[in-house]
Length: 495
Ligand SMILES: [Zn+2]
Image (cartoon, rainbow, N blue to C red; front, side, top):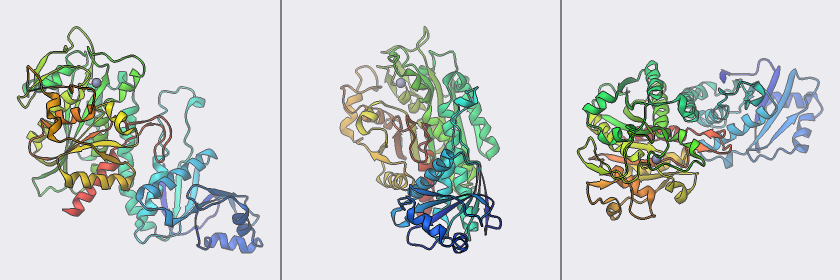
């Protein structure tokens, strides 16, 4: 989707879309038309179903003295729009209306209603996020889910300020689309080596990228991660990415760490076949980290940020690890593998440790489609958040509300420690009872957190949408990219 910015409507041909604010006079162009056509526009507004509830519109039959093909009025009540997310939702609605009518190009007339142009830009952002489609495997056009909206010519007196904000949102959008692409990709076309290649492509955004192969992982003694990978013919990789937006400082403000299990059969503790195809998105955490790093680089964030993703495939085979095996993690701690399907935490154990040793970050956030139990606990609207820092978790919670990617704080105090006690090793990789399965995963990862402000986000419920949501066409959601970009921005403001 292309956007260009203009001060005034110098040519009224094509489709004109107006934001019509509740309680405000109609746009000058419409007012002129109204006068020339004996009050026709006002009459349309009166008799149409336009409701100013931010999800209704009037499709005006164009009067003789206009050159437009079409005039669409979107009824907007500013009093009801209270966050960036709500303005984005309005934009997402507009895209749905235009796609329903197969409209490709519009002139979008926005009255200036905020001094800084941010909310106007959020409408465009919501429009853009809802144009995403994953059509690459359809060979017949009729099977594709089409997006028609292609160019928006924004008309606003505020266009310079809107454009400034749009540049940031466009960078985030690029990251979200990358994450959605990776999450949607089937596992035969996104093995660990292919995902590492995708990460390497981000070099052209200015990120420093390093790929560690199996030999290097063995040298680093990443026994927990290697144990997961040993059953697959597809070799494991770990990729690091670095952005230095404050080159004068040696500090690392954040490290982001992602689970990248490109396919999870469960291993020898094999999963039931119903729904197993969904395990192609068990690399969702790493996809978010890659999308986020792309956004951060494209928007030239003024922070030092590093990332580590652990890429493996979890397969059952003659070389696969067995339940009861004991592995030694890079940290030196030993783990009894009770269930080979609790493999994500084994990968995280080594990559969060490596991120801390290599980058010494002030803050570390890991993301993983870690447990089905998180869906049992809190459903699919929010990610489960586990943290050792109230300051950091408050910041993330606030960011989640602003961008519409909410998180929910889950318990992780020491009373759960006994759940992962093992009779033979320092810990085991699953809890003892049936309860608090997500916390058992988090408390396991916490064993590898040394002295850093830390958040673990369990995104198993929010990585895939089975139906359309505001800003998110069904499929891979990209949840986490917008959330963490906003958190970094707020963090920098507070520092
Ligand atoms: Zn698993």
